[in-house]
Length: 266
Length: 247
Image: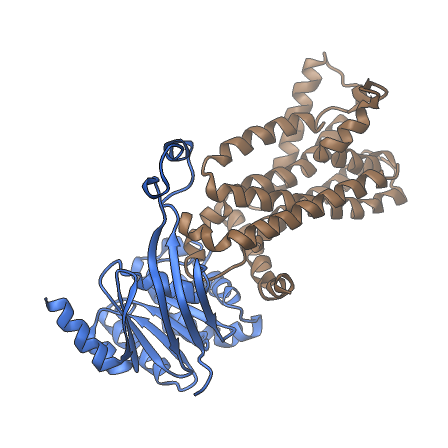
């Protein structure tokens, strides 16, 4: 099949490009790779400061800084990948005018860059947990299936976004707004406890939420298995895995079908 | 007769729109008849057919805007024909064209690997040719600097060194017979001749230089306003083309 061939032929390109991109980011900044750690840490302080101040000096969430740190680490993976996918084909125009590269490879490359950053954030979260004496449990291993679902879902979403971004130059603006909304809906710095037990049209509100806001649901799963020592919600994870696969198939179909027209539009 | 390595069969390539979609064009098109629409498709290449045999060198001539570069891009797989079919019977095809194909934030060294991987080469294959590429490009220490710091001459030297050293079964050349300074030009022309003379390699070359084409090409494709005006023996087509251009 064409997809398998393309993956075989171009995965080296995606991997090399991702690593080179990270190296370039390091080389171009004064503090280099320290930013990968500093960035989430600084935002952790900002949110902790703001929310503790607003709530009058106390937060009812235990280990609030870690809570925010985990939220930001996993949110950033999704948001950065989707946001940079909008214009990825446009920004690779010069390269794509000289050689044929399957377009999903570019999205894969972006996802790898953000995946590496997310893994650093995950490692750091575990260090903070050790520091705060939060007990390690077997449930922490459940991070792996959650990551798997999250990677597929983000890939599918980014592919579709990359396709639309070619034809609609200002799609970037729309995505920025949508991502901001999703950020506030995803419980990066608050719990979803408020939804618990509430009923909406005969349905549990939290259950509805988990079915429509993937990032919020998945970030919560990461916190459950890391911070609280619970297991993950596998039936809902399967639901999002299927959602992710459907999006991926649609995205691959769209990019393969239209990729030869992309270069004529840009 | 042998099976051709490149088979262009009745190919038409349209440019659908000059730019991305905007609500204005959609609105303007709303009440217009099909032929009057804003951004109506423009046929850059119309019903063109020709074949290239293994080891042959075929030139493409035509006025500016006659669809030469569009046709080359279809051969390398960047454009898909809207009608007809392009068949290239070679796993690796490279396009040697002016202009950048590099990622400017990455170093020349990294871009060698990226270009190689994009062409479908394996790591070992690139590493084997690495020294040769760096030496041919004459970049010296600059090879470890980001490509954005290069002069335009350095850009094209590196591009030429990569696509000419990592050899492919099919080589497409778009007007790059004069790259860099005079010394490098001589060197690159010698390299091009060497590649063209290789019996295993098929070359399609776009050029405006009559002398060069007569010297190196077996056959010539003459495009006029996107249509195939003539395809045949090099001298014959070039004679017709030159007399057409004089009038």
